[in-house]
Image 1: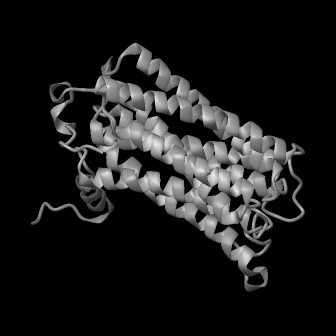
Image 2 (image 1 turned 135 degrees about the vertical axis):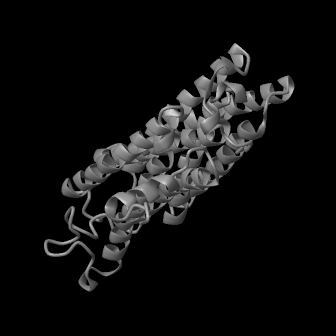
Length: 322
């Protein structure tokens, strides 16, 4: 008689045996998918607002009182808003896969376990906040809070990517103290830039629906106020890059950060001078996510990675780098 397990217990055992016990190619692919979905969600959320589709599905969690999906009568706005909601389900699947991918490593790679757990908890929170956004008629401050959570999740998945590729956080600084202070100052200014950018967008014309009120701030003034921390970020980043090159520190991520900033500033100036065309505003939003991701990577580079003999052998990270 065969000893092979059958039924639910056997199926569960086979699933468990498939789950990774080391940070392998599957884990890295899922981590990249998590990051990509978070950035893509910001892009589709921007498309909802920029096409005036914020109330394309006028209620939540259903799209209409009688349907979870958009109907032909709702037109393109319903399709766009429902598509954004549908992406949340795709992201949910990816987040569940990310959690399962590290579940067997939780004892020795607690960092990965906690990162995927927090990301998973962020999904229902983000969905509920999106529902409140619809039910409050696209209140600009609620919309802004929704974007803040999305940006936080971009930073979180950047950390996940870093830890998947480079191992657990080391216990020693990898850069001079002054350099680390400069990087942290730049990260703080990036945070201010994002918040002021949210307020600027909340004062502008792209509300998500023609009848939606704005936050009451003067958009022309806010454009100038938003530029101040943006240029301060650029100056600090130039200082970071100069220090990096002079001291022979790893330069990949500082240069990436500088590149994203230069593109974002160019897009920001162009959109301000051309009447805020939706395509440029949407690009600016996605670039904000990439800026936060690049800044997070620079901050993470301030600490060394654990040496191979400091990582428990059953979950040793393969020799891979971002």
